[in-house]
Amino acid sequence: MRLDQLASRVTTARVFAIAGPAMIANVTTPLIGIVSTTAIGRLDEPAMLGGVAMASFIFDCLFWLFGFLRMSTLAFTAQAIGAGEKKELRVHLVRGLVVAALIGAGLIALQLPLAAMLFAMMGGSADVTQAAKTYFAIRIWSAPLALGNYVVLGWLVGQARARLALAVQIAINLVNMAATVALVLGLRAGIAGAALATVLAEACGLVIGLMIAGRLAGGSLVIPRVALLDRVALIRMLSVNRDIMIRTAALIAAFLFFTAQGARAGDVTLAANAVLNNLLLASAFFLDGLANAAEQLCGQTLGARDRLGFTAATRLVLAWGFGFALAVTACLAAFGPDLIDVMTASDDVRIAARNFLVFVVFSPLLSVFAFAFDGIYIGATWARDMRNLMLASLAAYLSAWFALRSFGNAGLWGAFLVHYAARGGLQALRYPALVKASFGKSS
Image (cartoon, rainbow, N blue to C red; front, side, top):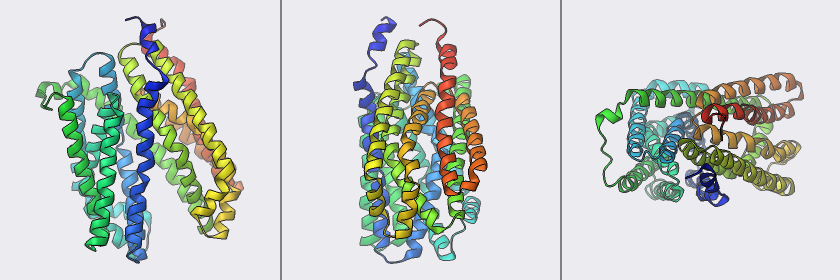
């Protein structure tokens, strides 16, 4: 098949066949937090509510750090599909699951020193910290399960089976919500019940995911030991995972720095920034879904050595991403003040949030390129360049904050937008050279 015929297959329909389910999954996920917060909140114990919030934030960052399990599995699977190496699909899944199990077991084994370090950094009150420790001690046992789900979801999306991935995610969310209500409100298990509900949900999700994977793999996930321990493949996987992990750590550092600086500016500013960050999630729902599409399509076309298809996927993801960014920007400009009023009853927080709303309104127009190129780079496994450019973006962010710090919270938001611009801009500048290196001069 000629390259122009392969490229013609990269259509808007294919983009949204992957991006659509991912967007739906992103929209439904916050429901878990809403249900958990409501269930714990009805117990009328503020320390428990604060403990769940603190511990959940810790797990969000901790598991996010190992998000490379989903990304690399997705990329390797998509590339194998494109290259016609279907026998490698089971190998990529099982190899990822083994790494997830080892990391999860390591987190469980290190839970005591890990908890001591993390809670010391958080600096919560004694009652809140004690509640958070209870939650942590139970939910940490979900680590191998949650990381295993990362692998399964990446494997499914890597094969463009986004609807099956969505089904698994919805199952996890529904079990989590139902178990939370039953354990917290029905059995009065308190914060321990909320943590146990998450463990049960991750376990159910992994069982469902493995059942689906088994059927897709022809009824068996058993692979030869020689294939599992292939030295060249292992080195490549570990190298890509290492670079994505460093990249993710730099991204987490940027968000933590933003939160810390907002906290130093006072409670009102911290609360206002939290409200505005919730508005940012609106654009993230859509842009992250399109990034998922970029990961799969760019991975598959790279595996097929289809340069025209690769560039077609890039153009479509960037074009649709920018279209969604414009729509979100317009919505935030029109309804931002009203949304702020819905999210907080404090007049001081409302005024502060409105003062900085302009930064959030325009952020999707910058973040779209960061999201899109993240997906492109992950699909192509350009992990080393992604790592280096993220570190450069972090340096640009901190430099901008240092230069703008006299402007207070406005300077902090300005630096945050510089970070978005640097992420997308640097990856865009590097993109042509990487395409040339990956595909050669000919098209």
